[in-house]
Amino acid sequence: MKYLTDQLGDAGVDVVGALFDLTSQRLVRLAVAITRNQCDAEDAVQAVMVRIATRPHQLHSARCAWAYLLQMVRHEALTVLRKRKRLRGLGSLADLVIRRRVDEIELQETNRAVWSALRTLPAEQAEVVVLKIWEEMTFQEIGEILEISPNTAASRYKYALNKLSAKLAGRREEVLHD
Image (tube, rainbow, N blue to C red; front, side, top):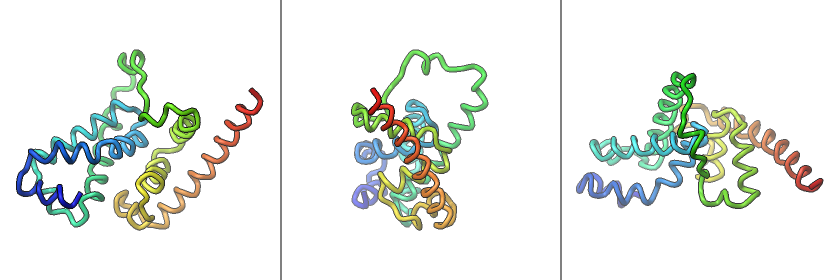
């Protein structure tokens, strides 16, 4: 990533494609945890990539480019979520017609159950779980990205895991009874 951000400062827009290829799946996963919608998550990531393409110095000059990129996607996903809440009364025909998977891994039943359980968590807890488990970040790093204390991040993670364990235990019992 460091190599790409260095090139981003020099070459600009030409490097954004490589940056997208390297990070998009992970960024979309975080955005899905916030928006609860694949299409909205992809829109948030795309908006961030456009912003980087037009102002590459933002990412290039960041102290930690990956954390800054995650923070940009989080903020954009929250913006998309606020806009969607305002339009909720209208409904979305696309959401009714098109149901897409969170990612390819969700083809397996176990992962579907995990994502389903993750979606029932409050967004504040779900985003901490995604950053901790899939991005392997420390609570300190998570706190910086989410603009909360590391203790708050750890607490949200603990509550989220308790809720997920209970939901997935119930799911296991359903599977065993079938």
